[in-house]
Image (cartoon, rainbow, N blue to C red; front, side, top):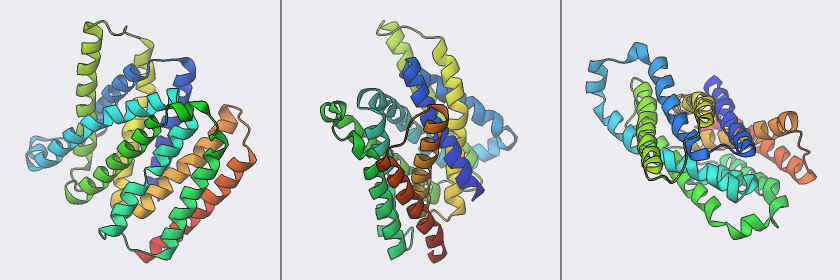
Length: 292
């Protein structure tokens, strides 16, 4: 339970920082690149005591798959930032949270999780809560004219969650969890630095020093969000039908509270109703874990 709470807190912080950076008009791509450099360094420091040549030799398959997956982290994170700026925060958040449908359905169909009516009801309530929360932006012109971006967020987010769940069950072990989390970020950082170098050499953009600081602030919680997620999946026996809905819906609640406390936003009646339904969904998911 502690790992789940830590995953919720660190992941929620990422969305809060993205919102803050958008308001400050900081270059999102450069921030994401330095974020992954920071993630890599944080991972190396955090896991320094377990790194050894025998460990690398024993888990080369983990390193390979982590490197492949890391290449997908960079564009996925950038798409979220771009969609937040162009399509808007609400449709992007909705698409990102609804991406839980992909790993949950996969977990239920292929037997990674036991089927129960309570879980189905909880997932349905969760999806309903997200629709209600985002419904007040249905007339937003930006959503109409840039509707493709949220769908890309939905697909990439769901596929990455699915890949993470599959690799954590079949490739990553308790011993190699640290290696996996480190090399996912190292791979993303290398891809990002190469891309940034090409952009600067071709003079398609200018270097922003403040993106380094914003990347550092984003990178530390980003590293631990993945590390704690792997620990959470392992603790709950890879039950994606419980972990991903609980995680995503809880992030909505934490983000809503942060919006009120830090950004002084007023919650509409539809948002409050959606939050109450989301709470009901989380409670049902918590009790459903006894049916594993």
